[in-house]
Image 1 (cartoon, helix red, strand yellow):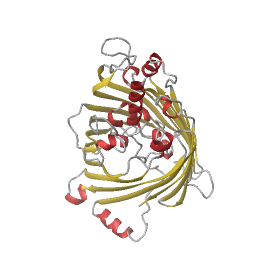
Image 2 (tube, one colour):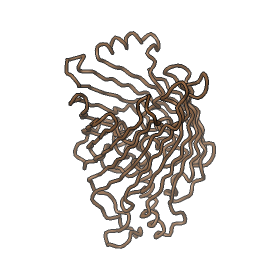
Image 3 (tube, helix red, strand yellow):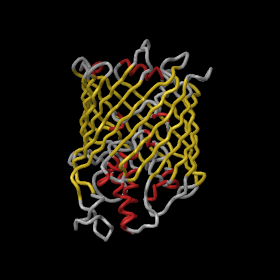
Image 4 (tube, one colour):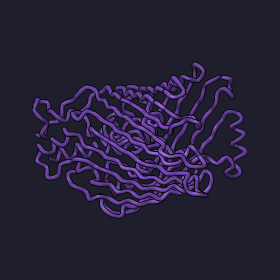
Length: 437
């Protein structure tokens, strides 16, 4: 029993290493923000783009979870991008660098204990390099090749309507954070890699990438402590590959239908992973003291859709939009074998508050059947099964570049019983502010 609890708790800890990375798309930097605006514009004219975004939030677990309490956490992101066409007459080339200063204590880690991190900025406090890459566009800008330190969450499984939400799983899904080594190449991690983006037509694109498959490297304990500053430029681990096909429709403002996007994707990892079904003796894994035998490779698939259901009267890009995503992975080698989320955004419908966004989302995480069977075979009093999430949020724009966002989350069966006990359902409330310059 103790081996099972240790194994599953370790896997849950790995799942908390990955966080969604993007600020909601409705937040745009204010070009007239303070006295630094002329400096920023002058640099932009010369090909240098500077961007600073600060997210600060107070969150509280008011019932359930591991224990009740409140935290404050913040994340300052600094980004620099150099247009080499303006700087050195190198057409189609871009140099990009960004990093984070992460502060505070995570509510998930210290209070809630859920697999789905309460906030997408939650991570251990540090100063961390995130991305550092060179991009070259070719074939009349239809092909973009990018190489360097890359975050996969910048290119894959991104949903326009999901980015509003605070919980990390609606960005980089918890099934990736749990099943990929060290949580995968997503916030707070990135990995050395190569990515190709092909715009085959105006409405169809293909994205493919290969990464070092373990951004923190192998070893015990928290992956964030193994790679605390984002400076582990690893290139010797087994590879992780990702591919995504993107189909857009009715994108023109005069189109007869409502715009939407469908994405189909897959991932493959080429290293050894644990087999949750069998031990080295060839019998069903029953925690007799033997570790699971290894299997070569892992993979998964997903499908997702963004769909506008109704256009706002004064802005066809706003209105009522929905998203849905579904993910699957083999049960014999993964902690999570099924994940689903969906949600709705409402914007542009309130007179005088056209930039505000209201949203509601749900998420469902299913523990793999192999892990569940192992728990039953060990005669545990609590067998892991599932975790579910409800989130309600409202993002209010105070001025261009500054938003305030209250949020409420209800997490059903936090940790899904993986810790050997059943945690009570957790209620989380909080307030976030985001300033972009």
